[in-house]
Length: 154
Image (cartoon, rainbow, N blue to C red; front, top):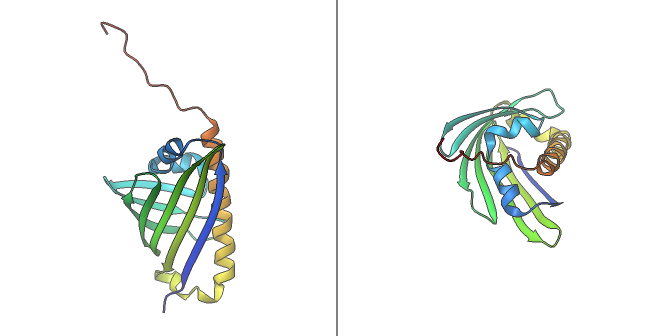
């Protein structure tokens, strides 16, 4: 029987939900700000292949399928080395956004033998999400690049 893992975190971020959504749905740019995400390959409008590695010496190969990109809840289906879902709920608060992260996955492939290593895998996931939070805060502190406007007659 596959080991099932559930994760939940709540963060308060100093940016509006729309800005955070724009960063979270732009998977191709994850390696720029989330150091544990090693590579992202788009394989369709709603699909991407993501390779990530936290502290443990194992790289996860994941297929992510967009289920919802609409506020307040973003959701992706996950398959590959993990099978399940990830949800980001973005709720406006006075100082920005309360982000509620939820994930439920079962391990597949070689990881299906990971049940005894549950505490170690939870620690590794915690490190991965600490990298996500730090990178996301840094990314949000940088103003988005202004859109270039064409000069009249150009």
